[in-house]
Length: 262
Image (cartoon, rainbow, N blue to C red; front, side, top):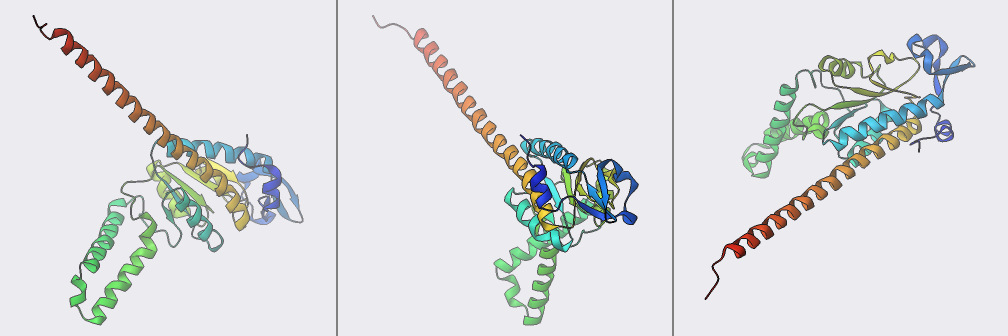
């Protein structure tokens, strides 16, 4: 069963591309027609591509790996934050920190700095400072939180990126490409799909279009997480069963070897 359907995507405006004069020729395979100077995206292909991307993301989540969502454009920020948080995945919605992937150790240092400030705030160390110094530290903490808050628990490089608007997030895409990290993205008719591993052709400006596609892929991610959890429970149960069987065998062996009383 498809995770999205033609009619739902149509009602969400996912088929509206950009003006013909702004198109990227590499998107030709995903364009159905031109209407009033605007390219119309082939939603049948969008449905297929959403399913393909969702299945791959499900497997990544099932293996216990992390997927980083990236969307700094206004109409995508809130919905991306909500959907990514719902499946426990990190996200960047303010500004992409240059070197976020290619210079990951430096980003981790900034995260540790934020954690250290939190520790000193909680144990009262900063209470001994003047009001001005205390305020400066809190502002610094707020700035770090704004830029790094949702990736604070990202202790290693993500296994995949999910991007809204590859033109706006070209630095993130470039860094992922350099490191061989697969990129999943909603790609509009004005963008270049050639550096994207999993292209989802759709309107990347309409909030409803973005939300519908995220519902599908995050639903798949959640399925992967649930299956991972279920497999873990099964493995633990199997381990307990084997331990019990082993204990029974040892007990039976000890009884057989015990001397018989005369």
